[in-house]
Image (cartoon, rainbow, N blue to C red; front, side, top):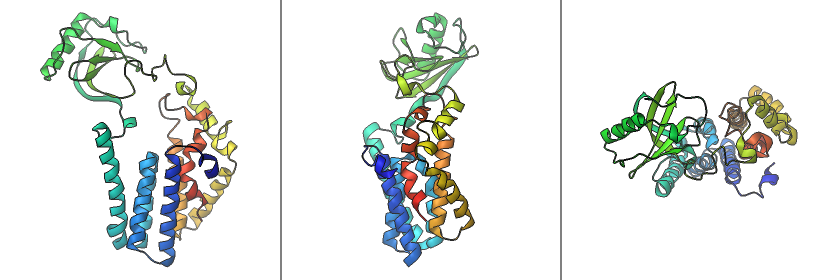
Length: 305
């Protein structure tokens, strides 16, 4: 698996390298004694895994427990500062690029609620995309008043535009953008925080194509992800052996390296098990090579004995 994806340009390759480096450093300390330098580098390496592949965050506590088992002093003086250095760089670069501590893919929703109330003559939600022409003059006036009450400069006539989300409209003002949702005869006015929704965005249902449409059926997605044409267990049969390995590792919970390996399977399982439960759009990987690619960063941990 590693040679296959070593020729691709993605964040998963440095994540896999970081996993391998962190495991090697912890293994050396388990064999020859803890070292502040190696512990610092191990902390940096596991933090680099998280920075490149966010689901790897679930692996971080396990690596921390392994480090604590090796040496509490070296963990506090070496491992944690290594993590802190990478974390500081992660948040600093996000802030410099976007003026936000969160990466862009965490901006896919709405902000805090500003106001709510009755739809006032506007048709109630029908589980479909909301036509801006359906907004009643009374509701427009109510929303304008709510924005004014929150010290938001608004034009004389609010402009409503369609959103990529059903029953949501976008409101652009001279200062910022807002979202208005409708549900069961009620409207809710919120701040805007969907960076993937903008005029002409590809991510509208009318524009998305192919695999980006997502898989509506959770069962079909799960089958494709596990044993379908690009399923993780079918296209790379060696993964079946990892199930046997996990059972053996849990029986031999003595060596720190073994603990890391079994934990990597749990992290991988958490990453994949959560996919079918997500909304339709993120369920894009089941019919592509993504399941195998997303397992890429955890491969070194599976191979560690």
